[in-house]
Amino acid sequence: MSPPLADHTARRLRFVLTHHSDRIKRVVVRLGDANGPRGGNDKFCRIQVYLMDAPVAVIDENGPDLYAVINRAADRIGRVVVKHLDRLRIGRGHLGRPDAVISHQLNQGQT
Image (cartoon, rainbow, N blue to C red):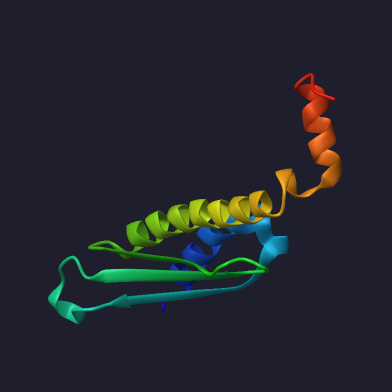
């Protein structure tokens, strides 16, 4: 992996994952070119984000341009992480905090 490619990958992932960095244990990125010098739609990016108390978020993306593949994969993994964390929060109760239920009910005119 070239330094510019590593920098691009790290920059894109920081951009989409920074907001939830306190919930992320580890990020694994695999980049490659399945056909080597023959070219074609064979560049791939696999991103795995290991979250605390949530399922692993995994995205696979491929295409002819590795930079574009990384961009698409980073955008998608950002959305998947948000979905995983939202499901976790909803599963633990409304917004994950008892005081949030009371606040939400008061805002809705309920007591």
